[in-house]
Image (cartoon, rainbow, N blue to C red; front, side, top):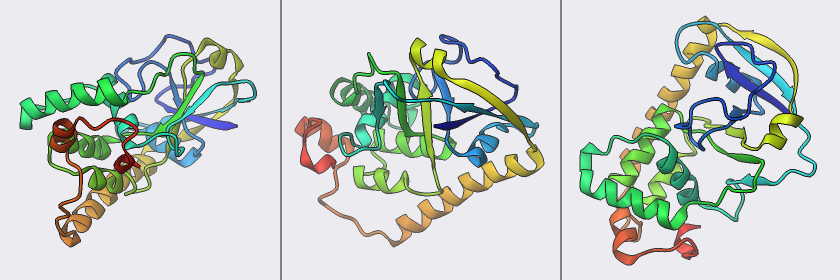
Length: 226
């Protein structure tokens, strides 16, 4: 597997246990198979960055792929809710109860895994997740929203074994005059597509909202989550 890590610095040897525990899936080394995405992620501000390139052989690794049929959108969301900082002031009581219930019932067990593969919550997508947990979006609307704006996948190394096996190949400079704007444009496309989607949608009484999930005590094997 060829992987790229967008950063404001060159990272020749990723270090296990180093980084921000508040990232999507907790502490780990966050990569993508897309060089273009890595270059965007390398420019979170209007400064040049680096797309670091690596090789990783997954043979013998235990991989948790959240985008397979085994998992659903609430499994992904539970990891975000556990690790990311959420401002739930818009609907605080429902948001806190929804966060707690989601973590207790839908959080995947990541112990024993070497690598996690799943969505990356850019700022706009993180806002979609907050809207759902505070009652503003249905589950179906959340799932549709995650398909907007070419979100992309991330590959996250979480075990010492994975850190030992990853091999640095080199890097390319990410020109912020190009890739910072591409990042902004991607988020704007997602926002515009979201607005168009909701303008054309009619209310569906069968959609699940977080209040329904709480009231009915929906569990992870419920067929409506697929």
